[in-house]
Image (cartoon, rainbow over all chains, first blue to last red; front, side, top):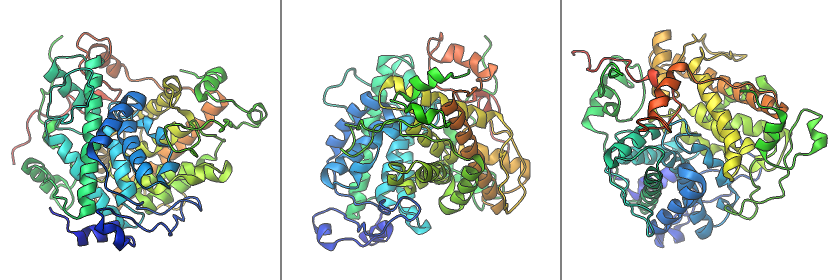
Length: 266
Length: 266
């Protein structure tokens, strides 16, 4: 799926400043206020300006060691925007996103880097109105599909602590991604090497997110497709299917029908 | 696990205003600034004040229909705090949290209500410093265990659209929780009845979160335990175990060794 500039304009849904477009950046009028929030909160989407990929990645890597995965990805993108756009990005308490560490407070649910990146995407590409949500949702889904299907991490920081082996997670879940990475590298899940993998992964996710947003702003983002397997599953189990008993766009086969039905004997 | 007032004081980690404690509320000094964010962003944790449970639940229910599950839970708690505490809660762009809808942009990953509630918890009970994260993480884990182990939704809104049957999800994932609820109620996953279930669930999660925070602030929160099954799994697979190949505190048996190893013949 390729988004045209027209789609993008519809997507961000705001009054774009034409002069800024020529410079490869997107600025959305912030004169409308979010009535649901406080009187001083600007309505979404907030202004986006083309960012440097490697700078975002390096900041996310450092951010991982300061506040873990979710904070690392979110803080990197928001502070890059605070530097280039300014307000209101500098009013966000990015430390709130530390909550997403280790699949949210170490619970092992959704990968924190993906969680933080999704919040940042929605802030600059989403909106309260249902129609305004979809462009951001499409970007987020594209990011999640990329994460599940590709050998990661695909960004090596300038000053790495260890060398990291790539692996395909087939899941957006922290505990599944960690297990896959540990198996590939033959390291333990609480080792420094595993932690370094998550730091590279945070940098990779932040870099890819910024790459998506830059292309989206320029109107030339080409999105990935769900795998044919997932499409087959969804044709029966998702909206409009004969069974219609679930929802989602995760890589079904990453978990379902994969392992044994019983634990090995111990 | 019961948190004493002493633990709570250590937890919020700030200079508590002694006079406010007597009134059953917690106010944390906001004179320290988050150096990592903008110059005007107050350091975490932000002030918390005892909130009304049913008011939070009703607002979350309405919030679900305005901006879905993640927004519903987060917006409810933050706007309740904006009303009772004021700044800086009224500076938060709560619409950002719409991203968590349907397990993040409809992907079916972590339940949005849980995701939004976790962010709100961290804002009022967490902090940048590693030691300050733990009290918030414990609260979040406790919320997630409660969600997995209990028949939900356990809050019925004042003006419900449908009657909803309770079920035990054994998972913090949207698609798993949706499937369990659909099976129990014999409804389809994109039906209005399923949507109403998620609205009740959002209200239930917001209400329970506020109940946790109120008790935490009063120093009398008693936390749940992980199930013995999860403890057994973690004794080998988590930190310090012989295998140590994953991390997490999800209900392992909610997904693993549950279904058949192959799809039924179609």
